[in-house]
Image (cartoon, rainbow, N blue to C red):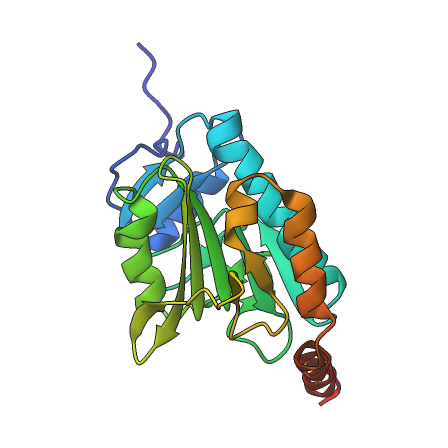
Length: 227
């Protein structure tokens, strides 16, 4: 039997305990693997994803964020981008929204996100998932300002904001809308999204985009960009 050459890297396996550097080396050597994450020094690799339980809600959330990006120069929506947070954590969230200039994160020379994006979104199976346990603590500790989790099996959406080192829920206003505090104008009708009414989701977003707060935010982003 021919032994493996010394230059061969072991493949990533669920449960591997690795440094971030070693995780990146092995991940880069496995181009057919499309999603692997390092959470608290442990490797997690995605199982096959269901169409209605993950693929559809994922697409709807990305569409909502892209519509906001299109109306808000200076912010960037990303889908399944690797995010380097600290020495033990390199997640690959389902979606994120970041401030491009003057925000908490940057894009590295290797084209990865470095630092905590302002908003991270995960599509989760249930409240028992990794997204609402270990990942929530990692995102909180690293200062992700807002964290949205869509629990597709539970039929619920949790949207948290960072306050004094803790995550607290963003409240639904009297009109049934949740409004981001970090991204003015990023409004969400949770009931409409859960019902699959994307037309209403986007209509409510357009109402947020039409506010004076959103216009002021655009002006702030523009001033930061020219400095």
